Image (cartoon, rainbow, N blue to C red; front, side, top):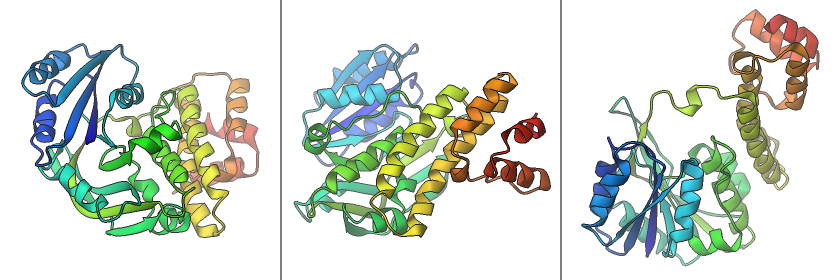
Length: 323
C-alpha cells in the first residue's frame, strides 16, 4: 500500500480539487493522510466532510508548525510500504500512483522513484521539469548530481520513498528550516540508500504531477537573517557530506553552487531585513563562506567590486559600499 501525505494550511480554494484528483487514482491500494496545520479558514471542515465519504482518507489536525512538521506527523501515521507527498495546491493525473508502482515493479532493488513535473504559473502551464528516463545506482553520486542533477528536482512531490528506509535511518524533514527541507530529505535518503550496492533510483520522463507555483513564495522573498542562515547551514551541511564522497571537480562545483545561492540570500538579508548596526552586520558577513557565494547579479561594475571585496575578505569596505 502507498501512503499519500498532504500537508494543508489555509487551502480552502484548492484542497477539494487536490483530494479529488488523488482519490480518483486507478490504483486502489493506497491511503490518503491529510494533516491540517492549524488552518484558520475552511480547510479542515472541507477535509472532514470528504473523510466521511471515503474510508481511504484520514484527516488529522495540529497547531500551526509549518509544512515540514505536518509531513513528519503524517509519516508517523502512515501504514503503507511507500510514502508519497502531495501539496494541497496541486493535483495529480489518474495514473499518478499506478505509474509509480509500474516503474518500481521493474526491480525489487528500486528504493526511490523520481518523476517529472508540469509547472503552472498564474494558472497556466509554464514548463515541464523533465527528467530523462533511467535507472541509476544510489551509490553513483557522480551521475545522480553531476549528470542527472537530481538536486534540481528536490521537491517533496513526484517522488515515492520506501517507508522502511525512512524509518530505519530516522529521516525526517528539518522543521527548523523553511526552504530546501524537501531537497535535504531527498539527499539524506539517497545517502542512506547508497550504503547498499544494489539500491536503485528510477527517474521517469513522464509528468503526472501538476505543480502550481504560488506568487510571493519563499523563494522570491527574503526572511530574517537568522532564518536565512539556518537554511544556508542546513543545505551546506548535507552538500558537504555528499561532496566528501565525490572526487570530480565539476560535480563538486555544481553542488556548491546551490550552497552559494543560500549564502547570497544571507548576505542580502543582512542589508534588507536585519536592520542591525555595523558590528552586527560584519559579524554576520563573516559567518558566510565567501568562497562559496555565487553572485548571480554581478552584471555591473559595482556588483563586480562588491563580489571581489567579499572574496578578498575586505568586509569593512564591502559594508561601506553596500550601505
